Image 1 (cartoon, rainbow, N blue to C red):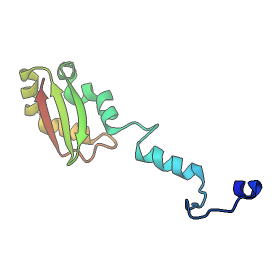
Image 2 (spheres, rainbow, N blue to C red; image 1 turned 120 degrees about the vertical axis):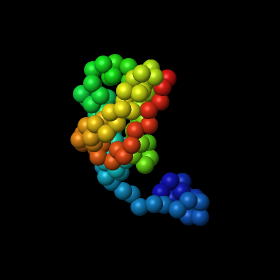
Image 3 (cartoon, one colour; image 1 turned 90 degrees about the vertical axis):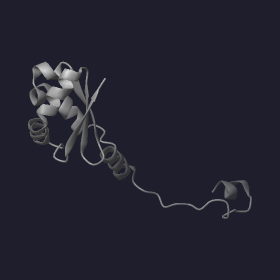
Amino acid sequence: MIAAFRGLPENKSRARLHDARELAPIIDQLLAKYQIGRSSPEEKLREKWSEIVGAANAAYSHPLQIAKGGKLHILASHGVVRSELQLHTDAILARARALPGCEGIKRLVIRQG
């Protein structure tokens, strides 16, 4: 269009024009892909952490992330808390799996630090 306005020959070999697409479906796909505006399973775990592990253990531990393969990584500040969490692994897993979006948690990985 600009070439025609200036009286220049049209050059079609430079770039291929793409069909125009609506922007709304693309934005919806990006929002779904990156979970923008939705709470993630990790956020739900952090909100309910004291109910999952108990108030005493929750004060000295927190969930880090849910990794591939359904591993829930937990950071415990003391060895005693780490041992207590390992002792109650089955109950912690059952309570965590009850939360929406956390059904895929298969095991706990508890680190001290």
